[in-house]
Image (cartoon, rainbow, N blue to C red; front, top):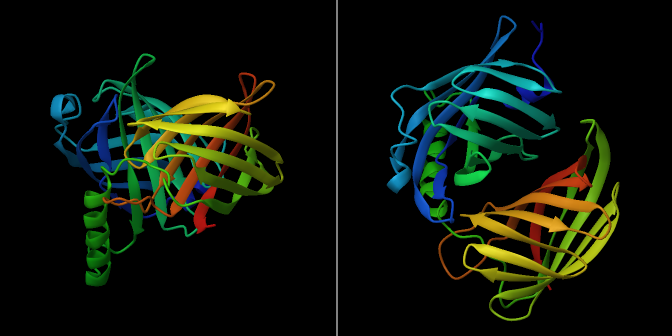
Amino acid sequence: MADEPSEWQRRIAGEWHGRPSLFDADGTWRGYEDIRRSSVFEDGVTTYYMDGGLEGGGPLAGRFRLGAPFAFGVTDSDQNRIYTGPDFHGTGQPYGGFVDAHYYGPGWQVDLNTWNHVLPDGETQVYSSVLYQGWAVVGCFNGVYRRSTDYETNPQTRTSIDGFLGEETRNGPTPFILPTKAPGAFTGTCELWGADQKLAGEVTVTIALRPLDLLRNRLDVTWEGAADRRFTVDWRRDGFRSFSEGPDAWGNAQAYGRANYLSLHLPGAWKIKGREFVVDAAPGMSAGRTLTVVYEIFDGAVLHSVLHGVLNWEAA
């Protein structure tokens, strides 16, 4: 039993408010999950609470309908956070402001891979859970959360959070897209964490875009700093799917709403598994300007490092 909470536990203290969207395996929007969640460290014991309910859901509604709020124990750690049930069983590994969790939910009858990314402001969390039956994707929950410490007692906090939830309701179903006519670049400073969960340094990430037509972009990707890498890909979108077709990297991706989940193969034994989430995307004929990224970098089949941060759009 720990006397003090872990660094990750301190990072996620408070109550987090969100309205993540539910998508089926093909990327079609199906509904919302109204959620208030918190992780409480008390007397050396950590308990995770989630309360809310599914609105809509289509053919997935029966699977994700529950009769009581979630509550489950967590063995707190900055190495392996163990989820001890009864509602979830598994583990999560923090890398600074990002945690990669793999666990099973008996109530939902799905295996989950959850990525939570606390942004540098400390008040915003980008969330997704890809849901599996064995190795087959069943669906995906994703969305943005905001933290509060006085929602019940402070009218200003309530007004702010309620307004934010209204924006999530409007924006959550918006499909991921890159700019289709204007060249420019997403640029920002990211943190690189080793597989040993230690900070390796900062990396300046630039994704320069040159539209080729309404469905294709030439992407010139540059990493500079604690990791140095450059590669170019021709990126093609087909509905919720996309494809990276050389010359320097090959792979594909599946979008669920504003988030794009990619698998990219680089020369040699290197591979990237990633999520690119346009947090300010909204309905309309435009692309968002703020791209939060998490890239897990593999050397062969072995995790080498994790790169995460926020990129902002700059027109050329």
